[in-house]
Image 1 (spheres, one colour):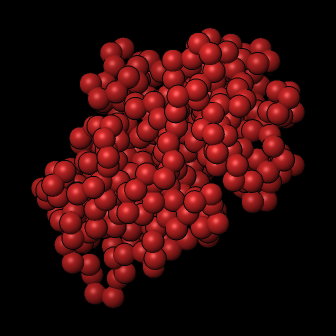
Image 2 (cartoon, one colour; image 1 turned 60 degrees about the horizontal axis):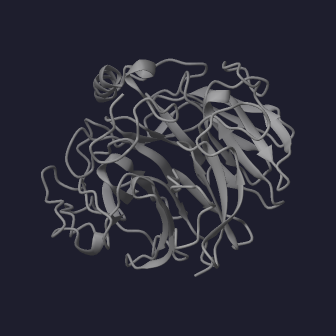
Length: 400
């Protein structure tokens, strides 16, 4: 299928939706209609509507007014405050801004279509970049990273390149690739091979856990490249965790040693305990689930990688929807968001891939409170992004 005009993501890439696998155009329209009508799809168990606060397609809650300017002039330097982005006043007593800077330790961005990683601060200043001359292994044309995460020791960054079937570990000080897994540009399922790797997370013990989407498995890989643990059965794609997984594209490590696994097929999110038993296995009300996370209260926050993009918070015990961020148009509309990260103050950072920006949203007020990138304008210069596909808020004690 043809490449998008603003990037090189081939629509046949298994890590993201295609017309062949999802009929995305039709699905997006149907989902938008169902959401607007508050009709939530049933599941096992399915998330259902709740009486709690909701930000939905039909929600008139305050926020950035539809049609407000999102030109580079309105979002100078790639960072926008609510007023700069055209936000309307918040509801009485509502907090429209975070308690402090959203990223006190900086923000790591996987700027996929620009073939680069970078760390920026709250003011939009670039603190670190990859690659530099000499960064890449011999024969490599680049790393089109769609996710990147700082290792717990703060010395390296691990990124996955689903288009080149590889995982890399990058030394932060030198910005040089010091370890790889996978065969560059070659698909496979045997040891040492990957098929559309996603969400490669570095663990405190030095291992890396990765969702190997089209091999329908999640693997923990040691520094010596041994597979020390696997969830799912290689090449058998169905939802019966932990023995079988259905095209997993998220594998978030949890503080208790477990994993939060996102499955594309069936729109499911599975929580596994450290010993591998299933804590919950729920269907989520999105067309294309991407990279589920847990908020501090244990709710599932999930991005919908669709043109009718949305972010939804779900209580995994009751199935109730806590809130939903979904707008059909205007500055608040999301187009293929692929990761939504809950922040400590209740806001959520989102990479809005096809609108070329990272935003911090406040679900309580319906406002965008921070932005990097120029809405709907791809670019490589200062303050610009091109299809950012991953991000990580860094701890205040981070490398910068």
